[in-house]
Amino acid sequence: MRISKKGEYALRAMIDLSLNFKKGSVQIHEISEKEKIPKKFLEHILLELKKAGLLQSKRGIGGGYCLIKPPEEITLAQVIRIIDGPLAPLGCVSEWAHISCPEEKNCGLQSVMLEVRNAIVKILEGITFADVCKRTKGMLEKRSERIIKK
Amino acid sequence: MRISKKGEYALRAMIDLSLNFKKGSVQIHEISEKEKIPKKFLEHILLELKKAGLLQSKRGIGGGYCLIKPPEEITLAQVIRIIDGPLAPLGCVSEWAHISCPEEKNCGLQSVMLEVRNAIVKILEGITFADVCKRTKGMLEKRSERIIKK
DNA sequence: ACATTGTTGATTTACTAAGTAGACTTTAGA
DNA sequence: TCTAAAGTCTACTTAGTAAATCAACAATGT
Image (cartoon, rainbow over all chains, first blue to last red; front, side, top):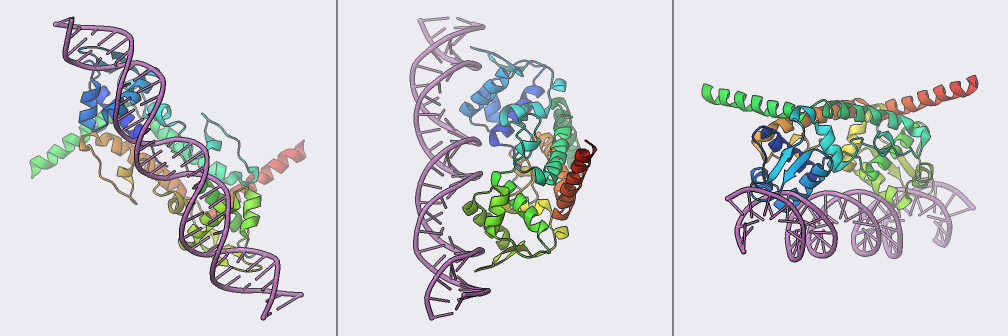
């Protein structure tokens, strides 16, 4: 039930790019250092996200990556599907990669897993990168409040 | 976000054993044939489930496996955790294998994944094998109703 | 011209999933 | 007590994927 390391890196990179959406492009090595992601590996990830139509890039001095659309319009589900594939726990309940069930008689299992899939999808399709950034900000503020109170 | 093949096999085997809970023990090859699971592979799986305290076995002629507890008392979550490990999408939000977050600042992501984890856990800890069997039965009945109507 | 940055494809390394082989142990029943 | 039928155990294999790295290349700004 895990998101791969690659998927996690992709999400973190997208968060970084979302934070910089209005400030212009960010370079691979900046993200790599900030998020502690191996640079060469990150190159591939960003390229995939670019090919999927989420990112824009510019080469040469002063180059870098930036989001094509505002963070309000990109959901976590989109990124995870690009990098890790379908969100469903079993192939037979994925709408993206539907594989027929070997045992029709055990479809009680299928119906449970469909519930799980729907729950996951509902959350991840309902949350944009703008939301995530907002959450992070909110949490940081709360934290500093706590520190001030001390 | 997938359950492994092994995990799926384990679930199917447990469903079989649940259906036979009152009828006595079932042999590996019966399950293997019915569910189309490689026999040798299934041996490992059942052994793991036995060591985890879910199954009982008897060797020799007329031997086989059976549930220790009634299907009402075993949840899907238990089996998946035994075979596939934690249910959380990221290590940093698992209660079973908590790994600290590399980037405290991006904990917005963590909070989303915690929501996902909770949604998954809520479903899988809330459904027992008795429930799954009931669902399957219900679906089969509905299907035969449809056939009769034709 | 040149350093900087992204692009591309090949390759590596490590790990895990999935499955197999074979010797061993227990058991029921002829 | 012998034997065939079951589970048990240890080791191994094979395939695929995750994660990462390498090196040559292409575009860009100064």
